[in-house]
Amino acid sequence: MMRNHEGYADYTAGIAIGRVTREERKERKMAKKRSCRRTVDEDKIHEKAVKMRKMTDEQLVHYVEDRVAKAKNDGINFGKASVLSARPKVDVDSIVDEIGQIKGIGAAKLPLIREVLYERLEG
Image (cartoon, rainbow, N blue to C red; front, side):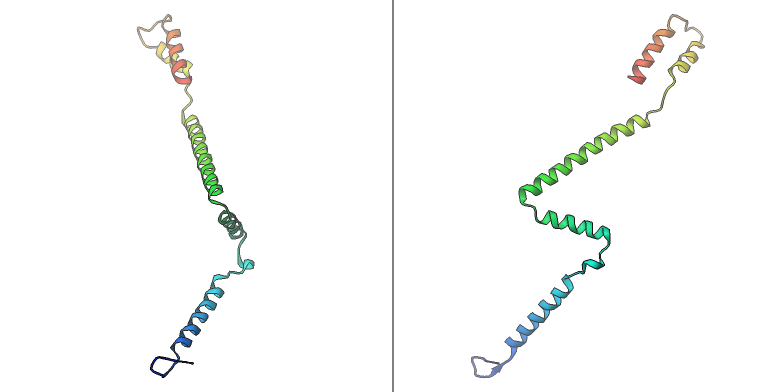
């Protein structure tokens, strides 16, 4: 119990202190999560997060830059692979045979056409 400047008993300070300590205790209880209740995936994520929080600024910058570079390389490689796999396979010989059936194109021009097609489609 404290006396205020008028001489009356003042309990407000004690009440306020009691409330603060009660709230702190409640926050401490709520902040803790028992590790036995975490799943395996949550444990992995938690370990990564703890590891990252313990990094220095310099380590964190290097880590992020390395991840960006790796993602960029993976994206470029994935793009190249998808373009190559998406490109339809062309049978140049069957195309040249069809062109040879067109009136006016003779046997002299067919090897040149075949060469141009191979150069453009497979090169």
